[in-house]
Image (tube, rainbow, N blue to C red; front, side, top):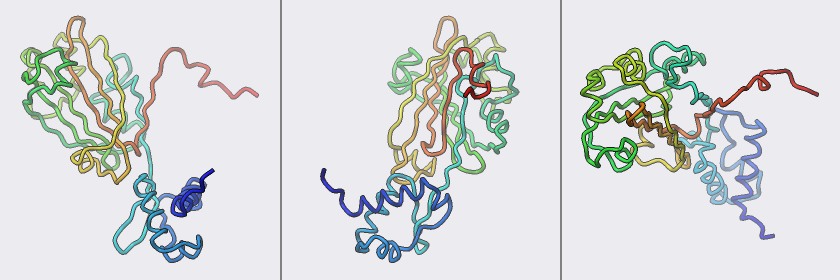
Length: 257
């Protein structure tokens, strides 16, 4: 077996220390000189090992302040309940779910007319470059960037539900609003993917080098048509997603020995 380079051995050892809570989230790592002495490595080797952990999103560096273990306080999203009208929920699903978890939601919001990209047009079953209304949210949990959510509505639907084009948020949530005007979402199709962020996504979500984003596309359907395409982009280090399918009574039971 080929022996790993010294900088990778150093990174592996520090990664184990972090996993074992020897260095807790928010704590500073030893200085480069201290690490150099511990591992019997040159300063350049130490820097290469630390740079590897930075690229993985495990630690961050600040000019003059050294290296710090990044804090990870993930928010867990139940995708089965999100925007599902059969579950008790008042208002916007994002605010409801984050508040219920004991966290604090905030968001910025904008509405604009936008041409459908090929990706969106395929899901809305409209022509590419056709007119859509985009409702865009930049969302935060406890003041930390959490996600962006871009929902595209076809032009024909906006004519039937004009509040979709209004600049303010829809207090009861768009899914409930549409149901109220007779356009009920009876089903949705989810797609989940991961990739590295674009420069704009990295800026909006404040992600460090090496941290991927998770893309969640939900296309909603009425009985006869596609009614919206929602693309949510999450920080990969601060989010978890789960679904509930079927009976889960055994999950809530006592542990059997």
